[in-house]
Image 1 (cartoon, rainbow, N blue to C red):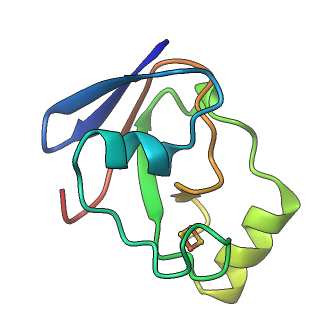
Image 2 (cartoon, helix red, strand yellow; image 1 turned 180 degrees about the horizontal axis):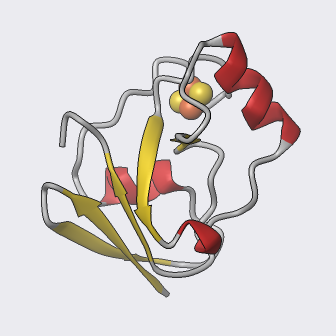
Image 3 (spheres, rainbow, N blue to C red; image 1 turned 90 degrees about the vertical axis):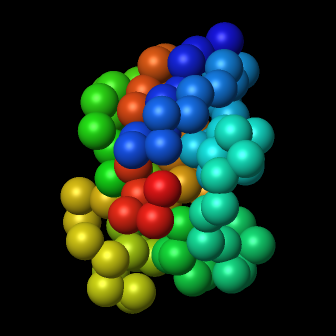
Length: 95
Ligand code: FES
């Protein structure tokens, strides 16, 4: 299990390896935009990685393409695509 922290809410959850950041946020009870239902279309689930970015799955070509198409800042990660492989802290403006 890996510790996932959500700032500035202060909420934390333990997530099994391979869990998406999206599913971890939902498990924490946080609202997270996902109008495409995690199909990799909307890019509304973009979050900022505060710490532990090296503990997320590397950004794949499809994630990069989705972000570009939706004009999402390149430094953000799509929560429905980023999988947890270690402790990580993420933030969203609405948390
Ligand atoms: S929920 Fe739509 S791209 Fe992540």
